[in-house]
Length: 116
Image (cartoon, rainbow, N blue to C red; front, side):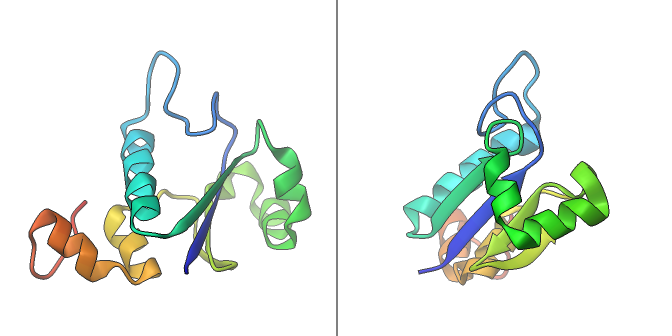
């Protein structure tokens, strides 16, 4: 099964959906990642503020950080390969990366696109 690993910038909590002002992109991402998990995708998420060791232990992430600093985060790996960095993908992108396009379209009742 497909595995997505997310390396987030420093945030107040693991999901970033906390504190007095929640970024709507992070709230949407939390729902999208829950959808992936429900669809059978393994999702692992690391927060630089809470789990810095995971960033140091991954040579790919370490190289990205050395080159681009924290601005390169978030980084999304799919089965160990970099798919995105510096932005949060939408559900359509996540579905494409994991081969779930059909389930995504069906879950929202669309024939050709997955709009989240």
